[in-house]
Each structure stands twice: as C-alpha cells, then as structure tokens.
Length: 383
Image (cartoon, rainbow, N blue to C red; front, side, top):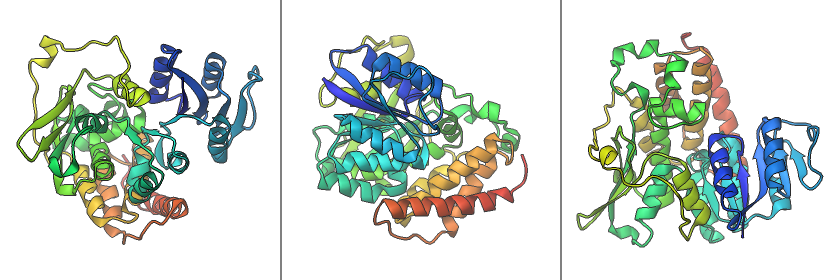
C-alpha cells in the first residue's frame, strides 16, 4: 500500500489523482491533502479519504464537521507540518506557482519520491533541486504529459545516446488567429483550450506558449539536456506527447489520447504500471497527426525558455514571477494579451542573474521579481 500526499488536491490534477487513488484502494491510500482556500471541497475529500493530516493554506481553523481523525494545519508553514505528520511514500505536488517550492524541497531532502506537477519548482530553482535529488537519491517523476512522455522513452537509455527531444504543444486556441488581432483577445477566449482542461494560469500559458518556455527549462534540468537539444513543435491533435531522437537516427514517441489521468497514474504506480480501463489506439483519431514549426511572431514567449537556461542563476525565478503577475493582470483586464510575453521578456532581459544557494535565495528572488513585475506591468497599457 503506497501512502500518497496530494498537494493541490482541489485543482484539476489533484482531483484526477484522488479519482485514480479512490478507484484503487488496494494499491494507494491518501496520507495528506493540501488545498489553498477551497474549504468545503477539502472537507468532502477528507471525509472520503480519511488522511492522517490536511492543510488549508488560507484558513484559520477546521470548518464545521471536520473529522476527528485528521489533523488540520493552516498557513503556508502548515503544508510542511502536514507532510511531517503524514510521512508519505510519495508526494504529488500540484500546488500552483512558487508556493509549491518548499514542498518539493521537503520531499527531496527526505528521499520521498516526488511526482511533480508544480513545474515552477524546477523553473525557479532547478539546479539546486536536482542537486538535492542526487544527494538523497530521490526520484523526480514528471506529471506533465510532455516530460512524462520523455521519462518513459528514456527509462533504459543512456543520456549520451540522446540527440534531441521534441516537446509537443497544441498551439492553444489562437494557432490560426491573425497575429494583428491579438490585442483584442479576451480572457474568456484565452481560457478556451482546444484539447485540455486545466487551471487558468496554465491555460493562458498554453495560449501564449509560455508554458512551453517553462517546459524547456524543466526538460533541461530533468534530463540533463543542453538548450540546443530541446525543440518545440506544434501538434494540434495532442496525441504524441513528446519524442526522443537518438544518435543512431531512431525516434521514440509516447502516444495516447489527451487525458491527464494517464501520466498521473504512471507517476503514482512507478516503477510499475497499473492497469487502467482507458481508450487506447483509435484508428480514426490517430490517422492524421500533424507536426508544424513554431511561428516566433505568434509565440514570442517560447524563446524565453532557452534564454533562461543559458542565463542560469535566478533567471527562472524572474521568468516565473513575471509570468504569474502578467497572467493575473491579463485575466483581470488590466493589460492586453500581447503584453504578457512582451512584459515578461523585458523583465528577464533587464535582470542580471545571481546564483541560488537554497530555498531562501529562491524565495527572495521570487519576491523581488514579483515586485518588479507589478511595478513594470502596472504601468502598461490597459486592456
């Protein structure tokens, strides 16, 4: 029986994880649940799974009807307290943003396998976290479908055999919209993803392709790849989740219909594979698979991923903080859609990278970058 900590349990990744765990009570048990502010949803989850602990980050005490057998913690520090109480066998970190970084560090320092859906952890502090993983022999299992695909293609392969990897992206909802019309894009339009159901920030990131910039940084750290070994291609069908090209000319690809439960279950069951009654090969849907180059003028944010890898230090913290602030402002109607990539690029280019030596450095870099982003973007043109 594997005890799983589900952090970000009320979001889409967390909810899908709990569904998979609930369907396999003989394999998995929930040891702790962490939610940001959704007290009623967290209460329902606690009643159903009866974890040893839980944390409501924005809370001041247990809501009415809280089960006596689950210890509740609150505040940002409560996340780590809940983990200590629960002593999980696997941490699935689906907390959004820089707030997920301390939990990633907690798992890696204690040798607890980390199923990572919080991509910001590696974007902000990849060098430091990967060093922790090496020191404590802690596996990092990527939940993102693209990196999970690469992980599966590389299971038995030596890194010198890899020529390059191809990260696929749907192109988002504006793949065919004229670029000259981008200034008129509304938040409601940006939140309509063509194939995936995700949270607001990730969905907007798919529209700008900022999410692929993040994934370039992640792939660099997870798989020890140089930036020139990482290429992004548009794949509108979202069937091929990523590909690995080897030095002998062979290419391995991981395919499947777009459903986040597949990579989540892979990470939950690793190093085994758990049965899943899911639709497999479908001739009609697999018959026509397209791969298109990325248009730089349509997706200017993508180049920032390779640039951050080359700059190093705390550049990733600036990228993440600036994007969080820009996305928040766009969704609030305060800046136009093109200003997301433009404003983030200005902040990354203006920053002089500094080394990160630990969690305090990473969080300090995030706070400073967030303040600069609010000042810079707050002066931008209204949407």
